[in-house]
Length: 398
Image (tube, rainbow, N blue to C red; front, side, top):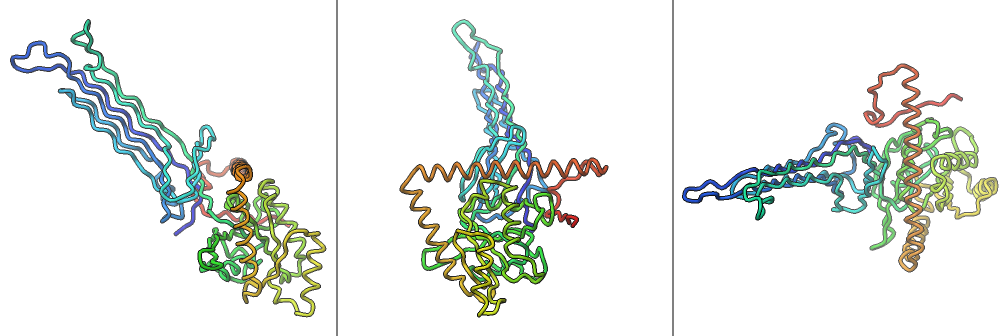
């Protein structure tokens, strides 16, 4: 199924039913008095996280969703039927943003979680409500109120503990195949991965973490080169970044330059995300002669001036992948324990994630506006919508 991580929809809650104007008419009962019933409330609109979904593609084809209206009241003090609530299933990890106010309404992070996105209209009152000692035959009623109408943008961000960064063909998909049961496509050409992939890494019984593989970045991605930076938003929920680099590129380029280029694009996208813990993973070490391997890898580290953790692996043969997975598991457990023991650490982490969300949303929106302005200058169709296409490839001039 086609992977879609953004969709815009219109949700409208149901209107409340009108109150009834009625009087009791019965044989042998003169002046029976008012008996008009109230209307029913309209239905509200909810979004519910469903773990069986992994894409928002259904909302590309049906954009407007309306809950049921409440029924009007009737005589004999009968209340109108309440409108049925509308529940829209979305994938776990969906963020809901009001497009008119740019307010983040909520974040659905676990299965079964519900979020009300449109409040139902209130029911109207029948004339029975207005009777009093001085007004025995009221003809006053009220109408039901309108339900909320909202333009929403749904943003899907994958839920993972660890994110993979790197140039195309750095071995990210091969690595996730090596350490998990995920089977993303692997080939000998750039941009094999077009959508994010998730894999569950089981270190041992009852110890596992989720790793996310996103399409590769190239220099100039912030300006639209390659697949752009739209998939970087899937890393804002991760705790740790693994920066994979090919130690022996087929084109003879410098691995250190590749690391710096990715770091620069990451800073352009979100400074907070660029400040996340990032480990250097030197991949494809089996492509270097064993007697020169240590010196070659150390030269890359020295050229970068890297002072963080460094791992040497071969994703294809599995060399070094087990020790890397164990180190990641220990780090994740230590972070979780620190957050559980210190509420300030947990609050600081939550604040950092909110800031990354805001920065990522602002950067992607700015990129979208720039592309739209460029199309208008070229005289393209104004009805063109980026969301109608999965991936836009832009080749930057050299």
